[in-house]
Image 1 (spheres, chains in turn green, purple):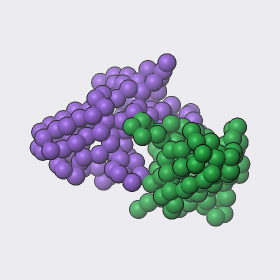
Image 2 (tube, one colour; image 1 turned 135 degrees about the vertical axis):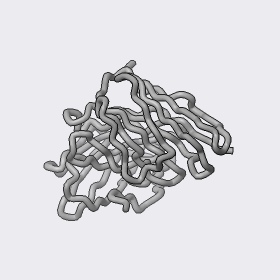
Image 3 (tube, one colour; image 1 turned 60 degrees about the horizontal axis):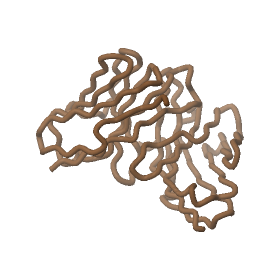
Length: 113
Length: 115
């Protein structure tokens, strides 16, 4: 049973425009939400996270928004750059001490120059 | 640079022949994880070690085993690989309870092919 869902397998955006990647989850007990970026032949790298007690976290061009009532989060990339082209995974952390993460299936972002 | 290293990057094994994948870390993180990722699917947690405590996911097949001889190393053993075990295997580390929100540090993965 997939607890974290990314319903868009791919997204194409023009360079300089905004990229919006979406993620939905089912478990209201998740306490942290994270975004990872993955290039081909590499492991995922941590991008940005948000605590469940917040609704927004910003880091440079990357902003994550959390809507707890809708169990939905989104990653905004502004402005998008060709180097942002990668697969983006949404993940959620369970509240136990082991920090287990549940991942979505990923969204492949292509930024067109 | 502190990092998570997986060896080998690519592994080809014969159907039914035991294979071991390795992971090492220089981050001194107390939790180490093994994930299996098949094409277009979410990474699936197989098991993790919190220090020396082994935690197996309920749906991880018995064919998969793990060892953590010390803080730095963790191994994934597949006793009798089947064609369905061909996947990318990702090792990751974290600081555990105090590291929430910082996420994992992943290795580059080992792509396993079963022939």
